[in-house]
Structures are given as structure tokens and as C-alpha cells.
Length: 313
Image 1 (cartoon, one colour):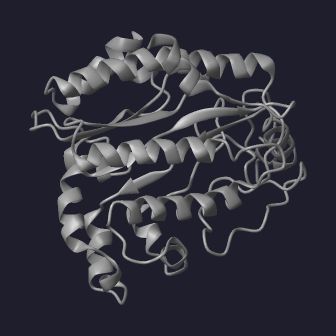
Image 2 (cartoon, rainbow, N blue to C red):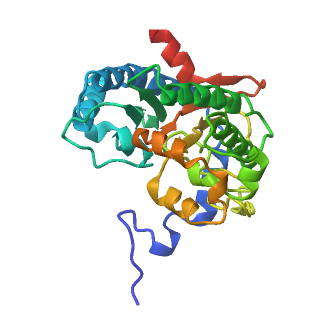
């Protein structure tokens, strides 16, 4: 049998050996000052595009037109995006990865955009949600989620567990649902009975860098040992404790997803939910707010996204 070789004459069994990849992925969890500046600049360039998308939504544009406004706002082509633009109007805001953008304008109620920019191979990853009517209950819920997201950002730090912060985020989302009379039980019960997860079915965040979902988040050491998964939340992207100079996303969500709501309604906890309030919120889809934070060696948490928004306000 003839061993396959690459252009450098290396046999296939030695291509990208795991021992080397594990070392690279483990060490790259922390970012150099140059890498941090690339992600910082990626946030700065993305924010004007987010504002352009918001204006397009408020002007009644279609999802395709909103995405075009975003690209114009950062002076980029679609194939230069670090990931496909998610732009969901109304109920589409409840689709976690809504890439099949509609060309037809809709009567605007709500809008969720998840989009970044790439700078020298490093990405930003930012999500914002807007209500067309600033006086509606959904707009108030967005404000409550914004406060929640900032509180969760503040929980980060060297040695902190992303799993523990995700568990906290589940409780905080339940508290928002209670505040708006959607749930009729305690936050502790909502989490213990897996009710909160039906409104918040994804993790709190992930590592960010030259991959949008950066490497090394599940490694226990440079030899490739994998950390044990959380029993309750086994699909979380980040398991390793935070270390100096990491960049993380913080992106809690609250959604009214019909297929998950139908399961709740037919399940044993249906009486714990105010279904009339559900009916009011379903047309708005959902809320996600996402910032990019740096965990600095001196203990300071830098919010690259909020800083970038403040620069243009």
C-alpha cells in the first residue's frame, strides 16, 4: 500500500497530528495584545453597520434589504463576513440561525440581527434586538434583557466557570419571564423543571478569535484531555475556566419558539405558564443581546462591544 503524501511529501498519518493541534488550541485560548486589537477593531467596524441595519428595519425594509444595509454600513461584501448575517423580522427573530432572509417587507414589530465583521482574520460577533413600538411590552422586555446581559457580562473573570455563569443565566432568564407574567412559578423551579430552557435553548457564549467559535474551550490541558461535560447542559461550547486575555461572547436569549411552546403546552408543567401572555409575545419572535468581552490579566473586564457602541452614540 502506498502512503498518500501532501505537496511537502509528508505522509497522511502525519498531517495535522492531534498532539500538535491540542498544543496550539490550548495555548491560543489567551489572546495577544495584537489579537485583542483585531477583535476590538472588528467591533468598531461592525457597530455602524448594526446601526444602519436598525435604521433600515425602522424604515420598513425587508430582511434582504436590511442585510444589504448592514453590508453597506461596514463597506463589506457578503463573502467577507465572518459568518452569515442573521436578520430576523417579527416571528423570524425566534429562529436561532435565520439565514433564509425574506425579500418581502413585513409590517414591522421586532427585529433581531446577529452579525460581525472580520479584521485580519479575527471576528466580532454581535447581536442586538429592537422593537418597532418603543412603548410596547416587548420593548420593555428587551430593556430587561439588556440589564440581564450586562449583569452576566460582569460575572466573568479569571478562574470563573462558564458553566456556572450559564446556570446563572438560566435563572436570570426565568426571572425576566416571571417579571412579564409569562411564568407562574419561581425561577428555581423553572430551571429545575427545564421550563426556562424552552425559552432559552442555547449556551451563554463561546470563545472568540480567529474562529467565530474559537478552539480550546473544552480542553483540560495541552495534551488534549477533555473536560467532563455538564450533566444538565452537555452541549455548552465553553467548559474550561476563564484564563487571562481570553475573549468571550456573552449572549443570553429569550425566545417564543412555537415547536418548543407546543411541547410545554402538552406537558405536565403547562399550568405554570400564562398562555395568554405567550400569545401576545409569539408575534415578536424573541430577544438575543450579545457582546464580546476580554478577560484581562489584571482582572479588568473590557466590553469591546459596548465601548464600540458608545463611540458612535
